[in-house]
Amino acid sequence: MKLNRSARELLDRYLLAVKRELTGKQRVDIAAEIESYLLDLLEERFPETEEVTKPQIEEILQEMGAPRKVAAQYMPQRYLIGPRLFPVYFLVLKIATAVVVCALALSFTIISIIETSTAWLEVLNYFGAIWKTALSTAGSITIVFAIIERVSAGKEIKEIDELQEFKIHDLPELPAEEKEPSKIGTSIEIALGIIGLAFFTYINSTGGRLPHFFNPQTEMVLARVFTDSFLRYVPLILVLAGLEMTRNVMLLVQGYHSALTNWWQICTQGAHTVMMAFMLKSLPLITLDVFRMVGAADMDIAHLESLANTGIAIAIAVGMVITTIDTLRKVIREIRKPSA
Amino acid sequence: MIVLAAMSQLNQEQYGYSLIKSLKKKGFEVGQDTLYPLLRRLEQQELLDSEWRVDDSRPRRYYTLNETGKEMLRDLKAEWSEQEEIIRRLLDETE
Image 1 (tube, each protein chain N blue to C red):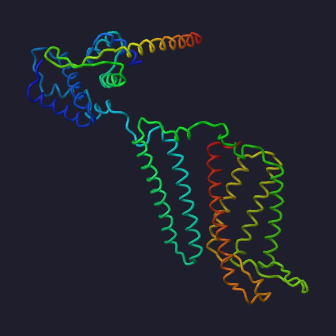
Image 2 (cartoon, rainbow over the protein chains, first blue to last red):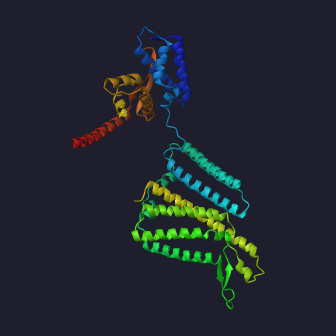
Image 3 (cartoon, rainbow over the protein chains, first blue to last red):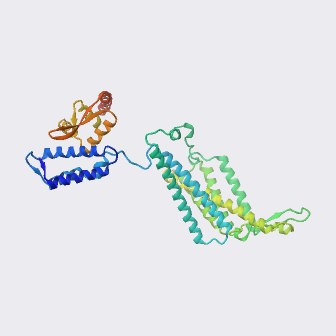
């Protein structure tokens, strides 16, 4: 078996392509072994006297496959972050991204409250900035772990191994929904619901006023505490509190969490979040008229009002973030493991 | 399984192509894309020795089991027999 000139040239070109895909000291040696295999194969297929032509070698090379594929068989498995580091990488990625996104969302919410003139375009810009930061955080963590992967290849990393050790006390508690609802807890929630309903019904009837007793000598006087902006939400607050109370009564009667009670809670929490978002846009929610009425002339009441409303806005924003996370957690759990 | 099959044939010197043929003759088919990289990995693990030699006016790389490789082959054979026995017992239960 002999190769004619064009066949030899084609074989050499193929071997060169394989060599270019290989790295390390052994690339020449590997290419030589592949050549040896191909010549053995040709020797078996073609009689000693026959001259192998270009189309014939082309057929053999097609059987072998692309040079990249052939070379890949000799290379170690390549990955950015390997199975040893991946669980720790993913944990760090989740925590860091969540912390950065929540912190940024909170700070933007506060800014948008303080700067009352915040336009919708700016809100969109905030979301863009949050997305950009989340991506760059995830990217930076990925790069750091990819570097650790390269640097620590074949070495033991004590800290990583410790993180992956299994400890019984690290096992998660069963989610509350999988346990029976606490009778005492549910009863307290019902009682609080009744108090809440009574309170908001009362302020709705007084136009946001509450009695004050700064001067015990005089008759009881009502002072404005809640603004008209807040009063607009009172009917909705009453409806949501009523729904939540009804759900708690249902839980107490049936004695277990069902799909209905769980989705009921998800819906009311979702409605709460939406309402809180609207409330943030309706500042001021409270007024300190009571100080004006008692004639506290030496106090900067307008400044105090502004501070009080900022405090309330921060509390609402924090509540919104917590409720959103909790609602999402409940939705995911209910989808993954639906209640009966 | 492929490791065991390949190592079992390397008590005598063999080059890649002759090993493929020898295994095929005994009913065990394996492609060059699997066998050649495997031989290199076994050599890197210091279980095989290899050398280039010119035969029939062409260079070929010959592989053979070294002492560590022979010891490993004995261990693998024992483990294989044990596993085979367990599986056979399990399958017999299903009949």
